[in-house]
Length: 547
Image (cartoon, rainbow, N blue to C red; front, side, top):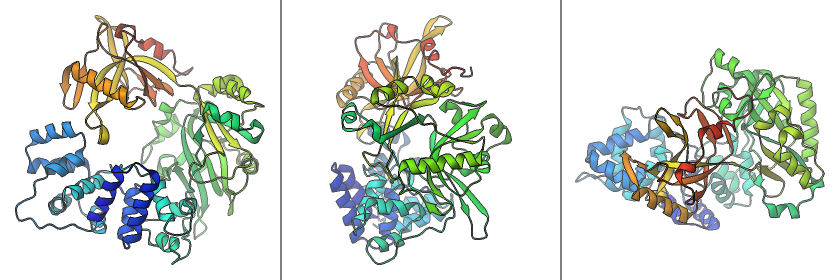
């Protein structure tokens, strides 16, 4: 555990991509199985421990230290794992024992909820501050050290002569501690093969296009299609050992979400793998994203939910048909096969994402600005932008630059007033960087501010320091770690907030939810009384949005 702790501690301080890869590769090269495999699983976010939660950590530290002192320390530090690691008092005479990472993973996965606290306290007693911090990061699922899963797989590939894409392609069928993967990479074994009859395949992602990119691209080389405001999914169907039909629905990251969408899977009678967008379609019309959220993150669904929120898949690509892998074929060839499959299935739950006609970039810009007039018709409000795909592009894992581009619609903006602030985590733990903002609406005694969203990114470092200074100077109330700041018509801070979409939401006080809100700029020039009103946001709701 100490070696793993040293690795993630060092990764957190290393800014360079190549240096991070070397650090991980050196660790994997010097560490035996299965320890390195469990470290790889931790770095790629493969672990989830049902009984190890932040509440357990809080309970343990409360037994060892003064709860008020801990609350004050946590408020100052801003990170639970770091606070507990620094404050944990080791009993006199406790043996210094660093358990193996494999031992910790095994116990976290198998111990009962009642037995876990004793074991966790024992591990914390035996580890030093860095080891305690790493352990708590691991069990709380907050292992953010600036090394993505892709970077960890790149480090594994560097142990041999394989490419990161080679590792990416076999990854979905693997499980920790990845002994067969390391054996293959190091030339000691064969390529791992999955026995899953309906396996997930790594998705291909697009780069956001910049203005300068257009001069290097030829419109004739690309095809365009709408970028729908749902979630990316992969529908896969195959045959099991006994010939039974096996169907799965996966999220973009490979999470099996089949249980939440039985209505969609029953309607997809094919063998192969489809890439597309999960939507809610009622009466032939795509519903806003907040409607789709009623079906997300559910382990099971009721008949009423199935009837009220019918799932639909809008297909983008065909990755496999029958036993034939189509990913090496050009996009146009895959698209033709996809169109034929969708037509053959003739399912009301599945349709083909339409291509956007254009002959030059100006044509595509016009379609992006007004999807309803460019073929999306009544579904125009559900379009996020356009996708540009090279006609000859194969389907590659990850985010290769060049074959696919995304060109989102310009974000909408609202001038809102800062109401509450809370400290961030990690490197932002000393700054108030999480903000709740609101707009004006009519109240019983005049205009009042009503919260409409939260944002914690979009600003520069200098803007962060300026907002933090404002929060500290103009705090008028405190609610635990949350500070309420002055927000009157004559005094306060106006934030220009950019967002991708808006929808009705009964879970929010204002009845609205903003999609991907972020701070675009600080409006020091604007009095809070001139910030936007709730009525202006309601006017942006998609046509026909339920009240």
